[in-house]
Image (tube, rainbow, N blue to C red):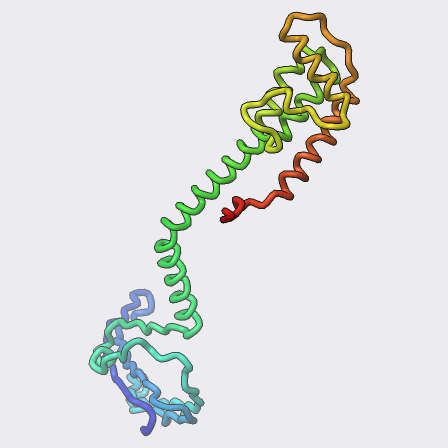
Length: 246
């Protein structure tokens, strides 16, 4: 039949014995496999089976009706064709079908895994550099002028001048507006007499004189104004050295 390939399997027989019913008979099984080659409508012809009735001692027949069906072409194609001899011999077989989108997904995942393996050393190196940069930035901030200034202000407001002087020098050493190593005379600024009082108190502390009484809050405001002035002066200077004039 056009569009169908017929593969008949060898017949199988077995004995049927039922002792209680006194039945001794034989059973034969015939099977056929059809492979569809194209889309379309198909009709299998009727099958007539003849047999001998031992009760009536006559030949009788049984007719199986025709079978009609329609087949559509599959979108997927098998990886390989099934050999005809395997079907004719009734061998066990399996049809492998791969969907196009599944193949694309598997290929994409494989490419992604290979890309991750390839870039992993670079990503690990960049991550270590970024971690080190963040650690250095954190250390730089902790050792910067801001935390030192907050520690000085807290100690000067709550404690004595003796406990605030070391913190004052630490803040001056970390301030970019002052020269290093720090010298308390650098705090002198025109128009800020309160800074002169602070400088005199520091000198008096190191010369074993009596502790000078001064208002830290006024000195704090004067320091803020002096630092802002020095920062403004530093920003106004050109980073390039002056040109030689002949």
